[in-house]
Amino acid sequence: MNTAIDPLYTARPSAFGNIDPFVVRLLIVLSMTFALLPPGFNWGNTDPSGSYVEGSLIFQIEFGSLFAIGAMLAWRNREWTWRHMLHLNPFLILMIAYCALTMLWSPYPVVTFKRVIQLVGLVLVGIAISPPVGGRQQLIRTMLGTLMVLMAISFVVALAIPSIGVDYELGAAWRGIMTQKNTLGAIAGLCVVFWLKESLGQVFPRALCYAGMLFASFILIMAKSSTAILVATLGSAIYMVVRKRYLTGQFESRRIVLVLAMAAMLALLVFYTLESRLPDSDELLSPITAIFNKSTDLTGRTDIWRLVVLEINKHPIFGIGYGAFWLGEGSPSQSIIDILHWIPLQAHNGYLDIFNELGIVGLCLLALVFVYHIISLIRLTTFDREEAAIHWAMLILILISNLSESEVFRGVLFQNIFFLYSSTSISARLTVQRMQLARQAEQERQRLAQQRQQALLEQAPEKHPEMKGPAR
Image 1 (cartoon, helix red, strand yellow):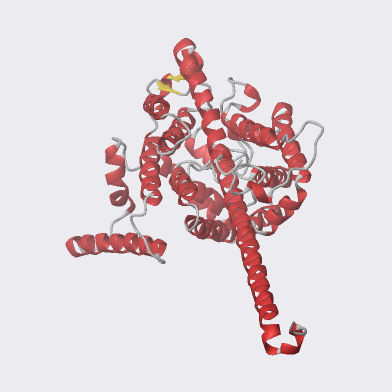
Image 2: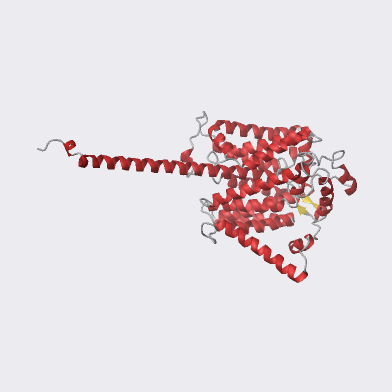
């Protein structure tokens, strides 16, 4: 646990000693494992989205046990839990409340209710594992260890059992024991960024960090996930930029935003001057897609997007209901199934899915969630640039990935879990920092009061000579 935080934390007595660090690690490991592996550990059903709707017994036991352990840890440290709840991202709470409200008009209110319970459970677990109960680096390092183990097993399975570990329909891309190749690529990209972070620290030997980075890069290439390669590259670059003090001063974060905005406006101005028009979506995406030899239709995703936009037009304000659209045959997505002649379980764009299920109200709330998260990261950067840098990198990774895969606020999917844990962890760090500053201010106030009292005592005999007593 972090020694800078631990003095504020006194563990509750236990017959087994202080079990909190172990429970925190257990919760993180279980969260990552259950989210990444096929539901119910059934490799015959590798589509997680479908099983999240089915509500299988094994699935309920997995996450039910996770939420129960999280609730136990939160109750064990209920004083901290209450403090953290008061300082959570307020728009995150509003977002979950609005998701629950959509049960009133959802065509599948029971499914909506289950999805809301998942969000509440994950936030509760996130609160339970946040500092000071969980150490400052515990979330990232436990995630790194868990993901490396899963990648090592995937490496063996891809070589020894290719019928499970290799997806021959997608150019022999590796998926290992994950649900799909993009999932394996995503965790490999995360590990590249995590090992980069550790290579700049003092905890692990440099040789181990470089070996881990090399292995993660190999898995990333074998997964053949263009999105994962892109976000890993950007994530690493953003981590290095934020970690270093290239921009210093009181308004450095505003300067970063201003420089990026000016660069974007300048690029648009140059294009407009040359073409007398603004660029369309294909022209904006073509430089990125050309890098990975992809077409600008993003492997057919835009076909789904157009159909989803037609559905959005039917309920643009409040949405159809949280988690109540992509439920397979006979569900509200049946019209899209009839056109595509296959069964999609997401729009492959998280923002469109939020718009479709929660309407413009939900989309605005999502934007406010991210804005508040960014503001919190800026505050964290002022006193812990190292930790803020990794959360900045992960946020960018999530924001970009959500353009092609629906994960944020999608139940117990991996990136949604990580975002919620990141949000609660950052809120907790800011809460602890405020408490430390308040304690230091109180100590300084008491010190000044004692000095004033001492000065008054020393001046009193000079003002009242009779108080000195008779001279000898």
